[in-house]
Image (cartoon, each protein chain N blue to C red):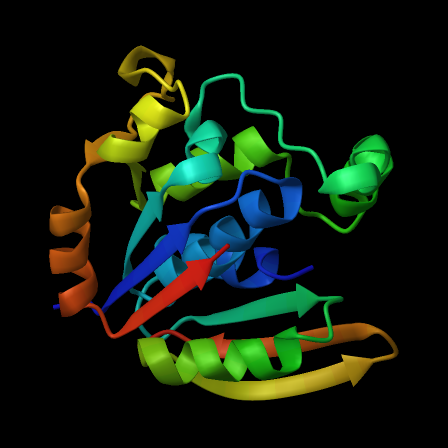
Length: 134
Length: 63
C-alpha cells in the first residue's frame, strides 16, 4: 500500500497556496497518497475563483512574482491545483472553519471534499509524514 | 524548476514499458538530488547522469 502524506494549510496567501501543491505533487509523483486539509484562512484557497496574493505589502507585487514563476515553468495556481487533483491528491475543507470564514460548500472547486478534524486526524495518524503549512 | 521535472517524469513513466530507458533533461539544480531520490523511492534505476553547463541529463531504466 502507498505511504500516506498529510498537510494542514491554515493561511491563504500566495506562498502558502503554492507550498502544499509543490510538496503534494512531488509526493504523489513519488508514489505517496496525499491528503491536504485547509483550515481558517486556508479555506479561501479552495474557492472556485481563488486568486491568492503575496502577504502584507508584497501583495502589490503578486503579478510580477507570478510572471517570474511562470518563466521557470511553475504553472498558475488554479492550473497546478487541477494538475494535483488529476494526480489523485485529496483536498479537504475544514467543516468548522468554513462557516467561520464564510466559505460555502457551493463555493468550493469541484472535487474538494468537506471534512471534520477527527476524520483528518485519523488520516494523519496513518500517515508517515504530516506537515503544517501556516 | 521544482517540482515540474519530477511531476512530468512520473507522468511520462506511465507511458513507458519495463526495460525502456528514459532521458530526462532538467535545468533545475535541485534535480541533482531529486531524481536519485525519486528513483530510490519508486524502484526505477538511474543508469546515467551527465551535465552540460546548466543542463542536467538523467537516464532512467524502467523497472
